Amino acid sequence: MDADTSPLAAPPKDPAGPAAPGAAPAVIAGPSAGAKPRLFLTRRIPDPGLALIRDAFDVTGGEEDRPLEREALLRGAAGTDVLLCLLTETIDGAVMDAAGPSLRVISNMAVGVDNIDVAAATARGILVTNTPGVLTDATADLAWALIMSGARRVVEGDRMVREGRFQRWSPFMLLGHDLAGATLGIVGMGRIGQAVARRGLGWDMKVIYTRRSGPLAAGDIPVGARWEHRESLDDLLREADIVSLHVPLTPDTRHLIGARELALMKPGSYLVNTARGPVVDEDALVAALRSGPLGGAGLDVYEREPELAAGLADLPNATLLPHLGSATVETRGRMAELAALNAIAAMRGEPVPHPVNPEVLT
Ligand code: DGY
Image 1: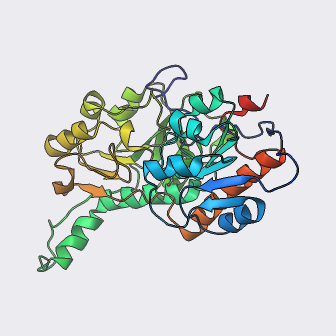
Image 2 (image 1 turned 135 degrees about the horizontal axis):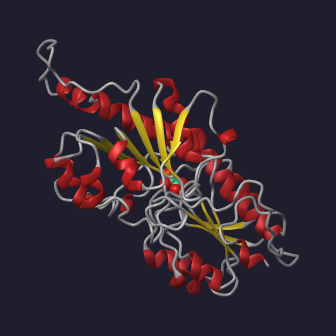
Image 3 (image 1 turned 90 degrees about the vertical axis):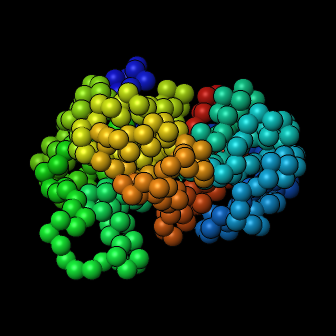
C-alpha cells in the first residue's frame, strides 16, 4: 500500500495511530461535579495505569487477565462513562448501545483500533483514544527478532538441539542468509516502520519503503542511511530480500499481501508481519511458503487470531510468535499509563494525548 490514494500504498503512521505529531490537542467536556465518573475496565491492566484509573474513576471490572465474554462485556458496559478496553474485545455499536448515553470515552490500550467500530463511536459522539508511540521500539525489536530468526534459522536450530538431532557441525547444516548488505522492504514507513529501518543501519542495509503520504523529508532520514521510497508496493516486493509490514488494518489493507503479491516476491525472500494478521491472506501465505517463491516468514499476528491457517504450524520455514510485539514490562506499563491518561484527560476536559476521532470534540 503506497501512494497516498492506492490501497497498495503504505500509510505514514503506526497501526491506527491517528494523531499527527504536533496536532492540536483535543478536549472533551468534563463530567458534572460530584461523584467520580464510572469506568468499566474490560481486562486487568498493569500499573501505573491501573493505579491512575482507580484514583480518578469509580472502576468496575478488570479483575482478571483474560478476554471478556461478550455477555459480560455488554453487562459491564451498561451505564458507564468510560470504557477502557484491550484489543481482545470487540467494541461495536451494540456495546456502545449497551453502555447507553452516558458513554463518553472508549480508551483502547493499543495503538491499533481495528477492534473498535470508530465510525459507530463517532456517530454517537463517543471519543476513541489509543496509545501510539510508546510501543514503537518494542515492536521494532520484535520485528528484528523475527528477521534474525528467519535469516539464521534460529528457531529451527533450537528445535534440532532440543530434539537430539544435532550430531556434529556440518558445512551444510541449517544455512541461512547474510543480512549485511541485504535490502529491507518496509511497507508502511510510520513510527514503527522507521524504527525497524533504523535498526537496519547496523547491518548496512539498503531500505526501500512505501508510505501513504509519499517520501520522507530528507531531514527524517538518518545521516548515511540508504533509504529509498518506492511508489508501488509491487516494485518493493520485487526488489526486497526481507519485507516487513507496518500498516494499520483498514478495509484498504485487508489482504494487502495476497497470492498475487506473494508471487511477486524474490525467490528465497522473507516476509515479517508484526502489524495485524488480516493484512496477509494467510492461506495464500501457506501456499507460498510450501512452493515458493518465499523462503520463509516470521509472524507475530494471524488472520483469525489466535487460530492459524491450516498447515501453517507444520512449516519449518515459518517462525510463529503469539502477538508479542509490545510485550515488555516497560512498554505494557507505558501503554496502560497512556490509556489511563487519555481517559482522565478526556473526562476532565483537558487536552487528550491521543484522540482517534477528534472530530467528536468539535
Ligand atoms: C497494538 O497496540 O496495537 C499492539 O498490537 C499491541 O501489542
